[in-house]
Length: 64
Image (cartoon, rainbow, N blue to C red; front, top):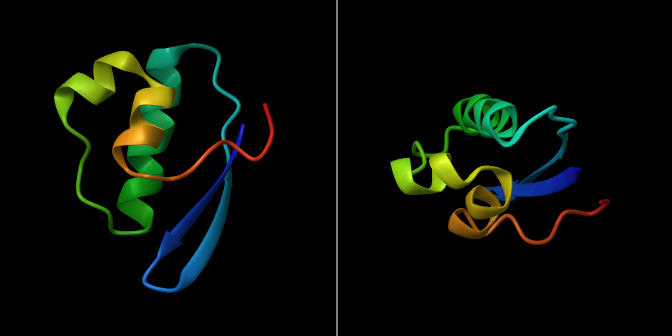
């Protein structure tokens, strides 16, 4: 999946190719750290990638 992240006017295109929802959550946590977003809530982490994208309003994945 490719997410477009807007952080204070800077656009980051982030490609995530996880093997599992847990791996997707770990990758997105790292992304949030890089762009200095606050850590996601535990409930969103348990639900994986889709919940995280909704929680942080990253928008729809640009590619499936």
